[in-house]
Amino acid sequence: MIEGGSVTSPRGFRAGAVYAGIKTAGEGKLDVALLASDRPCAAAAMFTRSSVKGAPVLVSQEHVRDGRAQAIVVNAGIANVAMGETGMAHAREMCALAAAKLGVAPADVLVGSTGVIGKRLPMEKVRDGIARIGLHPDGGHAFARAIMTTDTRPKTLAVRFGCNGRDFAIGAAAKGSGMIHPDMATMFCFLTTDAPVDPTFLRDALRDAVDDSLNMISVDNDTSTSDTVAILANGATGGETIDASHACAAAFAAALHQVCVGVARMLARDGEGAEKLIEVRVEGAASQADARAAARTISASPLVKTAVHGNDPNWGRLLMAVGRSGARIDLARAHVWLGGTQVFAGEPLAYDEQAASDELRREEVLLRIDLGCGGEAATAWGCDMTPEYVHINSDYTT
Image (tube, rainbow, N blue to C red; front, top):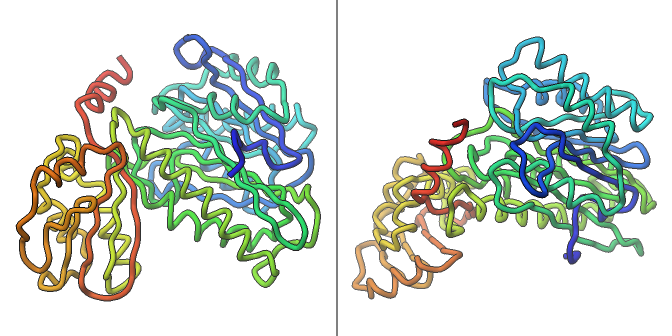
């Protein structure tokens, strides 16, 4: 892990952000951001599977189709969703403005917008903001701050990995606190690497990493219209192009997986109003699909989330969630733990309820269940549901 790492930790990336007046004014706020590579990049991305997609998602899908990109431009405060042709024109204009600033083609720019749905982007503010952005090698933290909406903290990290005598880096910036129950990736997660990576392998590695991490989190069981995860690989460190058969393929995939899991935990921990991170480990599943379905259903269950918030060792809610997940479970062979306290082993166990309650008082709560059906396993992350979540979302636009 790189201390203080961000999306500009890999070589050849610069970023910057300004306050353009899209978000409500406040000390230190930023709301328009730009991330760019000094050279062309291999690129891959995943997007929301919602049938209601924001214009930036549609435009970015077009631009990344050729497996190339060089920059990402983002605004926060307004999501540019459900705005028809006007929304599409605004998303394309954001790409064109960033491209003109960088001297690249508009098709080499990806775009993201996050915030309130159904409001028109104030393009005069966006234009002014993009024009004023200064790009810096240490601008990754400003970029992460600018893409925040209800997040309480920016989310950045970076790791290094060595292979064939070269020292590569992967960096990340992400945002997301609410409307998080991804069906592809997560709210926003932008990744960079200075490794030279083949576009096809990059796409496959991203999908595999996302399936184990960003697709395994839930805050509130709602999927965003703007979910985007994208990675740019500029090859600035040099070396042979890494494809699936290359000696460095496994090292790259492992580092990308590490970054995506780290981001997933950050997003779940910063869920709207959350006080605790919940990690759900499902073991003994008949298939990987069953393990993932059970873990995701437990982490997303409002009854599980409220029990954790109240430190209530109501372990039956885990079995309830598995039951509706569609995953196979053999109750006679199943086991359930709240933290280190086992509460079920084919039948209810006598256990120390205070000890179990104390397990739920931790800032990071572990829920574990063995389905008794096989050897597959999966982990999901979520957070407790608090009264503050209701306050945040009942007052979101008022």
